[in-house]
Length: 123
Picture (tube, rainbow, N blue to C red):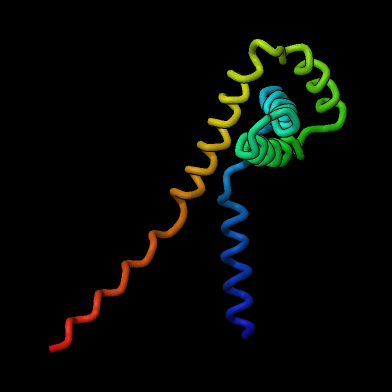
């Protein structure tokens, strides 16, 4: 039992040391968070609302490392950047970022097991 715990702790320590640092949140992350909330509230289609909500959660997670002062400053700046004319195209760009992150996670998953062979026909 002790060895198993020790080896698990060692592996977790190595994973922590070798894990790359997450990229610092950017003004674009703030903009995408704001757009996601806007589209989640205003979309007239259920699918659009759900996609915007997922994007909002993704970008909310990205913003956790940003200080309150920086977040307030970026919120004020980005509010000026979002216009009705550009919001849709900007939201599409944000959604592509979420999709790319999801595809990256899927690429790291182990391959699915091979299906079991079909039983031989009985004679």
